[in-house]
Length: 343
Ligand code: TRP
Ligand code: SF4
Image (cartoon, rainbow, N blue to C red; front, side, top):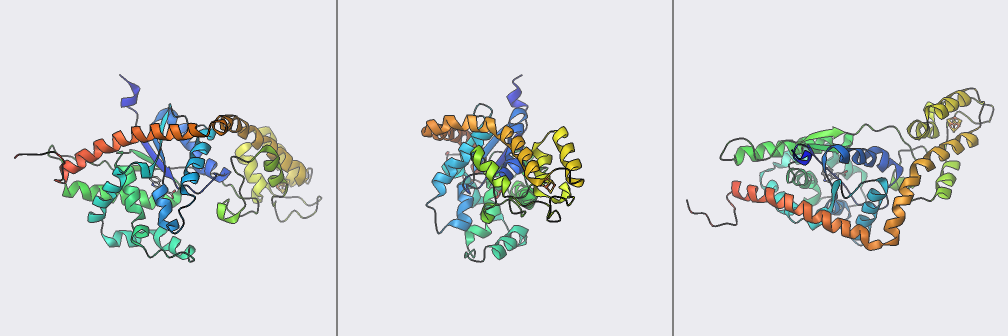
């Protein structure tokens, strides 16, 4: 039996926010790279979702989408092992989003925690739009159109997957399959365990804080950024002992360094046996080593800029086939088949 048929399906998306950073890698991408080995994986650039907040300026969406895919490829996603595509290239997502918008109660959407939070946080933008409220409805369409079993997401997205399950249940109630059973399976969130990683200023690593280490940063830049990164604030003088558990560099070591190096860091920091400059140098060595194969893979895509786009087009074709097959079932179930039917 072909193993493809028994693999569970995984689907996840990322908004095209520009070049990806280490936080994106540790929090999501590294997990995707592993999942492609064991699951039937679909990964996409959620460019329509980017428009829910950035509708007023779409100039960068296209380039950002390609940049994201190049980062995926550099990180090790392999077009022979997973399907990579761009959301807006698969019009079927929009069709299903529209159908879901018919059956989704407003109250469900107003209750989603990210709705209020984001509106609060992005005060400078007018988010009193239909599309912004409907963000999780579009996400439900993204997920259910591929009948995904698992959706790897961070903590903040679990509520969206939960809503997706509710929409699937409601859809199945309204439009049962003739043979019984639900047409749309309920997906499970796959919570990505995220080790703590902070930005160079000690806050959460985020593009909007300008404190990131990019996956595409050259070695010299990585080293420079770490050199100027904040450390345990209690360690003021070289002779003050520090605590790696209260230091962003300590956090980084836990993710990228060997057990031996980590032991040296804990011991040296707590006894003031090492200085922060030395410690940062070790962190940089470990990190640079992890990033080396990424740099190597990236070279190929930089040399041939059309290559990533060709991979997207191939991914689009495969995604579209799957999405269209589900839509055919859904059009049938909702009484909107494109085929003439005599009963
Ligand atoms: N909302 C997700 C985020 O901001 C991106 C996303 C869109 C997504 N559609 C999805 C994630 C479907 C998983 C499944 O990170
Ligand atoms: Fe942080 Fe290392 Fe300095 Fe300790 S020695 S405070 S872990 S940088």
